[in-house]
Length: 117
Image (cartoon, rainbow, N blue to C red):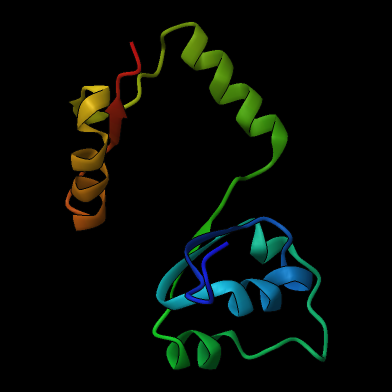
């Protein structure tokens, strides 16, 4: 699929048990985004993620989801228009590449939107 280069970005959803596979799949200098990793079971044979990340020049990011009931509560507040997402910038669909470059710079505050219509 990547002709031996590895993936530039891996979205890791399996936790401790699959993180080792993500490190095998990531390209040098890539990014692994871990969803819910901190809730995974800690084992004595758990790999040293810091050493793996440094040796491959990988950026390792955590994405905390929180409990389901809090998500449902926030969704309800959003539906009642009590809370609003912060939108930093909006791009047309044909500007999607520019939107990704903008995200990669990391200076945005809030959501970056790409319109599909």
